[in-house]
Length: 93
Image (cartoon, one colour):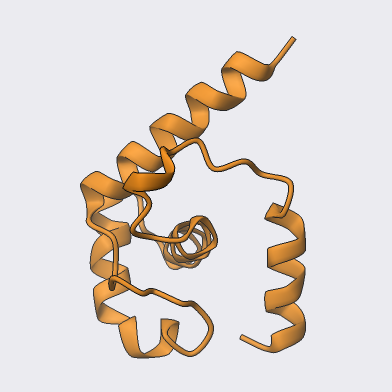
């Protein structure tokens, strides 16, 4: 992924508030979002499939994501998106 495209992705999600408690954040919000987008584009249809994609493409993903603690587990990805959905729903009119 080019630096320009990565900046575009970062800018797009810049206003998104991370719904997780700060002390529980091992994985970056942008890393989880980008991993999931890439995996879904490639056919992933579950959190398990997103994790498997991440593990299979880990060297490539490291080229543009931080991934300080590796690929998040499918449970972590699922909890993240569940919390994000709850946060968005509680902020909608």
